[in-house]
Length: 88
Image 1: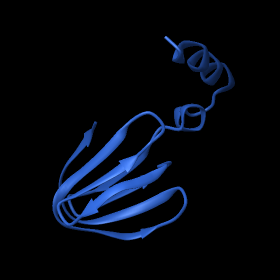
Image 2 (image 1 turned 90 degrees about the horizontal axis):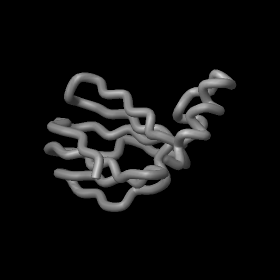
Image 3 (image 1 turned 90 degrees about the vertical axis):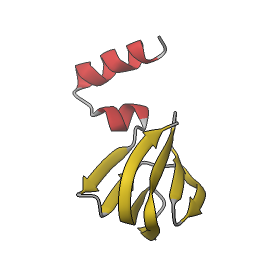
């Protein structure tokens, strides 16, 4: 229910959802890399799973030989064998 007024404003001003709500922007290239934007922090990290905090949800990146190739304040690139992405 909280999002309804924001959705109306976003639609009325033609603003993208990620700008208004701070949603993740996820770009998956095959099963070898994933680029995540608009994250708030890295919660956990090992070679089988990386958990990333967003505004409203946690993104769990699962796979094998996972590595954070680079990260900045608001974007990161994960490489390895990406098997699945989950919202927790």
